[in-house]
Image (cartoon, rainbow, N blue to C red; front, side, top):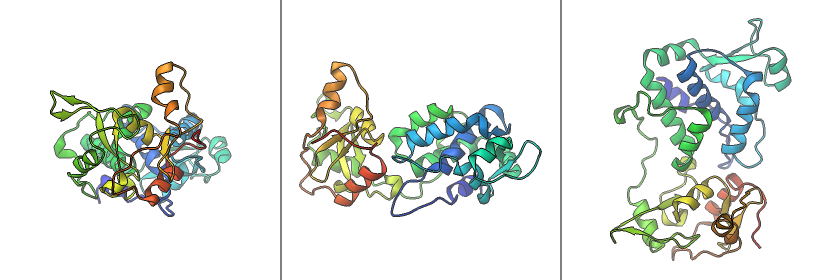
Length: 293
C-alpha cells in the first residue's frame, strides 16, 4: 500500500460515532514538521503542550488521552519511537516519554517515500483532513501546525475520496432554508443571481458518516458555519441555538452576532432535522455547557 492508503488505514478508537482524532492530528503534525525539517526526530517533551493544544482545539469536547498517539502510532507501522539512549519506546506514559527523552519520526520506508515523492506528503495531508475534519476547519488546522498544502500540490495528486459527496446537497439545503442563514437571517446575492456567503453545513460531519441529506443540513452564513463546526454553537432538540460559555467576545458586534443568538429557535425545513445528528453534534463538537435557556 502507498503511504496515503496506510495513513487512512491507521487504527483509531471508535465507539458509536465518537471522535478520536488523536492519531490523525499527530500524523498531520509530523507531516508539517517533515515538510519543514525533513526527518528530524520530534522530541516528545518539546511538543507535548502543542499536541495537547491541537487535540483540545480540533478534537471532541473534553478529550482524554492526549499523549496516547505518540506511542500507540508505532503499532500501525508508520511511526517509530526511541529514547535518547536508542532504546525502544518506553510506553504511553507521558512521564516516561519525558524522562527517557523519547523522540518519534516516520518509519524509514515512509520517510524514504516522502523524500522521493514530495507530492505524496500533500496528498496524504488532504486525505487525512478530508477523512477527519469538515472543510471549514482545514485552513485553521493547517495554520496551527504550519502545514503548506500548496507546496507541490496539483489537482491530479488529490486522493479520490472514500465517499463521494452529493453535488446536489448544497442546492437542496439552501433551497430548504430559502437561501437564508438559519441562525442570523443573512441572505445575499451577487447581481441578484448567485448567492454569496452562504454554505450548506453538515450537522453530523460528512467525515463521520454524516449523510448528504436535508435533515442533516443547515444553511449558514460563512461566519456561523465556522462557529458551528468549531463547537461555539449548536442546536438543542427543540431547534434552539446554544452558545458555549467558553466563547469570549467583547465587542458589541460580537455580542449581536454570537451571544444574542442564545435561545433563538430556528425555522427548520419541512423535512425536519434528524435528532440523532443533532445529538452527535452536541456530544462530539459542541464545547461544553451553553447559555441558551
